[in-house]
Length: 327
Image (cartoon, rainbow, N blue to C red):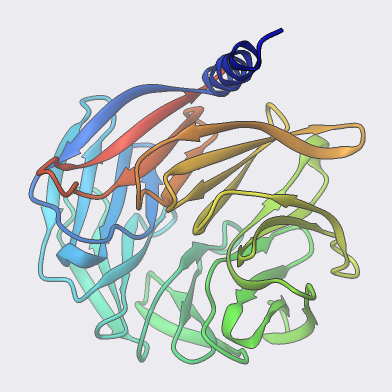
């Protein structure tokens, strides 16, 4: 067979695999939004996507059924993290510029108070057991916040600034990426202290982290940027159980328990999809997005993967790309 025909066949097969994994279902324009878009969250009951726009100093609230911007909150100082605290019915936004956590009412998004944490307030998580909000901030800390009282009720010391972290509600452990310290910290929430640190030799810049896994088992997945690797870790010892090449500038990871997939979204302009089988995970598809579109959010309840694409050099608006997994 001619070499050209072989290459063409490989390209067609690769495109088919990508199409079988994720289909671009729509784009939701975010006109006027410039610069980097950071984290996203969802208010499931109201079907709203919350988008922290660090470079623009704004928070966009997107009506998902209507595929349109519902409201924009301006005047934020480099907003990075966002979460919806269901028990308190509050949207929580954290900002790098002033180290604040700001609260907005869930119904009408009116301001509902603020709290100063220090510098570089970043990722936000909500403990579904208590309704408390956990924020990574500063040169090394996790703040525990009671959102109903708008007060800080606890603090957990870390070696350096925390990036992505996830809470395992079954064990009460928090797994935290601490790239400047070169490790993943394991924190016991009940005692508010770090109980272990895991390192992966030869890998650096661990930013995104996810926990979950097939059949209800807990797995920890971490993406490193230098070099670009997806690593699965033993949850008892922290030892790597699998390392896979992935796209560059990874910023988010999600488990899709329904399909036994992992999604890795990357600023290099791609989403890598990995499939679990009897021997572990293997690459399934690489889906093209756009350069710099590294922030993503997978919402299992809606079975959609949302990817934030920043405004283009040729004048295109920033947008939320809506991907539907197949089948």
